[in-house]
Image (cartoon, rainbow over all chains, first blue to last red; front, side, top):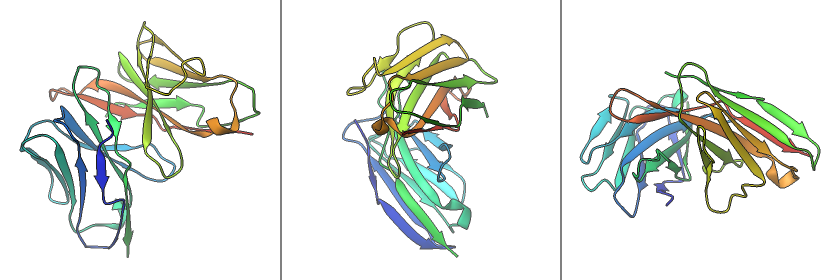
Length: 111
Length: 118
């Protein structure tokens, strides 16, 4: 089942913050976050496995809520290099490692 | 991180021909590989899960006779688009699953293959 991502697109000025949300109607095994630049393959950012987990670093971090149905990606003091499309990918479990991607959030950083 | 390669990176073919895309895990063995397609400005849509030595598992709506997947070894999976038509034009991306050592499997993506069918 495809996760729901929001917002669809964000335009920021360099230095501003952004939050991207990813939600599922049922509890997930894990959430993966990727960033994709135009014409390139997605690049892995991080994975969250535990309910209530928060990980990442000061600039780019993510959380996974207790029920494991909602994750948010936090981009702080954005840089021009953060531009791209961010996808969350969710695993429902079952041992097949299958990831289903959300529709993506296009982030554009202006200087 | 682990490296996954794809070949070719770009292919242009005539309608009706078949195109083979290779996906290789270069420095690790991948028992499971995944094939995705991505239309412009859209998400990655999982097409199939490829397991070494067994038949691929296709997602609903994906024609297995149209998109032939072979996973002959732990480092190579191939996707053949048979009798390609213009609507098959897309960006095809593979990924390979590898145990990260952190208690989970991480997926590493290949650079993608852009297929254009004339």
